[in-house]
Amino acid sequence: MSIQTTNKANEGFWDKLASSPSTDEYMKGLFRENPVFVQVLGMCSTLAVSNTALNGLAMGLATTFVLLMSNILIASLRNVIPKQVRIASYLLIIATFVTMTDYAIQAISVELSKALGAFIALIVVNCQILGRAEAFASKNTVWRSILDALGMGTGFIIALLCLGTVRELLGNGSIFGIPVFPDSFQEWVIMILPPGGFFMLAIWLMVFNAMKQRKAV
Amino acid sequence: MSEAQKNTTEATNSRKMLVTMVGIGTICALLIVLSFQTTLPRIEKLKAEALEKAIFKVIPGMVSKKTFQLEGDKLKEVTGKVKDAKLVYAGFDKDGKLVGLAIEASGMGFADAIKVIYGYDPHKEKIVGFYVLESKETPGLGDKIEKDASFLANFDSLDVALSEDKNSVKNPVTTVKHGKKKNGYEVDGITGATISSRAVGNLLKNSTGETLPQLYKNKDFFEAKSQQ
Image 1 (spheres, rainbow over the protein chains, first blue to last red):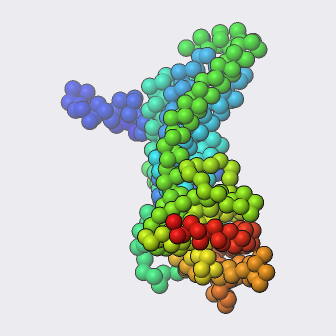
Image 2: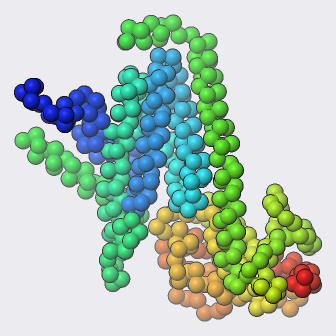
Image 3: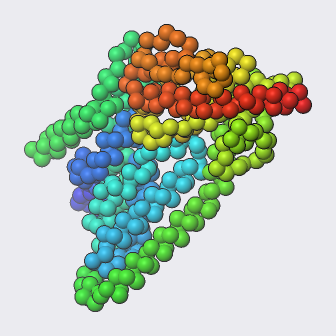
């Protein structure tokens, strides 16, 4: 969201930063074009992995890494890849980085890969990544694609955390694995089940749309 | 830039498509092989460490370990890692006495294969420890087989005594509904993780049924090892 300043002479560093197109490229992914709440993309991993806050965060970070790397490679090869085989090429590139992420996580810690194991492979079919490759990286410079990937990635993390914390809180009585409710709290098991994901997503979409409408008025 | 893109598009022919796909494929293959090779030693080290830790976890009171390979009914001592072999880990206390055996077992769970390791006390003929090595069960539900305290308490002392003829387990391990456990050989299941907890019961039933009689035939072998 760029801030319009009328008096250019008085622009400080932060104002300059806020009104630069690069900042806007990054910021658009956070709220205005949030991949989950506005574009409603990548629902498969969003619903599957947002059952706890930690799962959401880890999935968000892994996705951001894959998004960033594939955006860089696709943007630098954008004039080389023929139009007819672009989707196949993008998938190949994305799958490669997902595999590398999987190996890296296994090498970092057994515990982490135990917690995330089943979800990493899901990143390949996250249409948000393919969407950014097709809609942005294939048409823009490497630098802008990096900013775009970072912004979209952060937006994805924010969305997964929004869903994950509430679902974990209600479904498991804890946040990031730390119990917050007394033992007598009856957990809403449905919240960590798939239907809970849909309910929570609907509620967050409602909140986002209400905010958007209020801004528009 | 769009002009340039248009020109490239027009000039595209099958040969160019082929070259691009093969080129990208090669780059990707190189990247995967590179990351596989660089992470492999560390992954194997971590896995071996995790297994070592798990062995000590499932056999209470052990201080040293020996690895044996089970071939048919015969046991032989091995050192280091042996591929595609059925391994049994024996734990000894500080006097060199055998305190338990750790056995790996796996079976189909809800999402994917579940791989566990359990400790067996041949003197008491009981399972005395249990640890999930690998599972992809649903987080928050099926993965309770790894974390749920009351479920894990089943395996502190689970009856797997052999039958009279020593060829099978007298009462095969079975999973019952949560709170319905009556006998020493029953596993108290988890509400919300029915399939996963049953899968654990089943894989223990299969593994104990197959391995324990084989181990019994090598009773003297372990006695001899204990005195060393």
